[in-house]
Amino acid sequence: MSATALEAVLRRDRWIVAASLAALTMIAWAYIFWLARSMYSDDTAMQGMDAASLDAMMMSGFRPWTMTELAVTLLMWMVMMIGMMTPSAAPMILLYARVGRHSEVEGKPLAATGFFLGGYFLAWMAFACAATLGQWALESTLLLTPMMTSASGIFSGIMLIAVGLFQWTPLKDICLRQCQAPVMFIHRHGGFRRDPPGSVALGFRHGMYCVGCCWALMGLLFIGGVMNVLWIAAVAIFVLAEKLVARGRWFSRLSGLALCAAGLWLLGTAIL
Image (cartoon, rainbow, N blue to C red):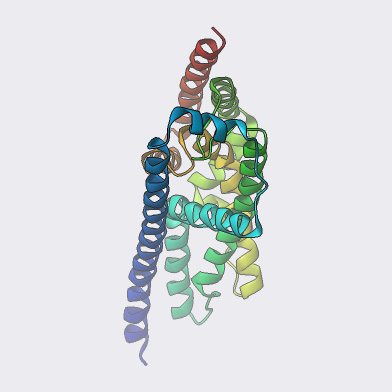
């Protein structure tokens, strides 16, 4: 195959990567919609119960999770993280594909893009495990309803204030800068890798910066509803905007002030 023909094939590969990311995102969101719809049906059935039955259900306390419930909850968080974070990871993944195309033409191929993407998602799968444990802890202390929404105005207010304050921390700034500038991240960490293990490790490192930037924002899901599709979409759009806005640092800090204000108002309302 001539160099020109090879370059033409590799150029199409970048479009294939973009289409694959879009398909992966749509599949994840389709699962989220399906799961949310199933939960909405359960919620509708609960609304048909009389007040005494609902009170008895809430007062009965926490029922320990079965292994099936644990697995389903973990899968839910994993798929949700893929659906929410793939769009914001797309610039880095497409950059990898572009550099890989040029490296292939020069006879110095990189490891396949999937290895880097796998490392990135590995970091978010670790977060999904932590989020699952967090949900279990909140349900066991009756701070979440059976429909996975906040059961306490005080808890919601404290959570909003905590997330708002995190938006002002140095950790947030450091991680956000790494996520906003893919090229800078690559230069600081020695460039893309040609070996699959090195590519996975680099993707995982980038994913950990992304987790460090966004983990607190994911806590907002416990307020608006872990399976509230509109709330999930709002958080995902905010995460994407935070990384794409040129002045993302100030965007984050202004949003932090707004979250703190909302938390104080909610906390005051709950206490008074």
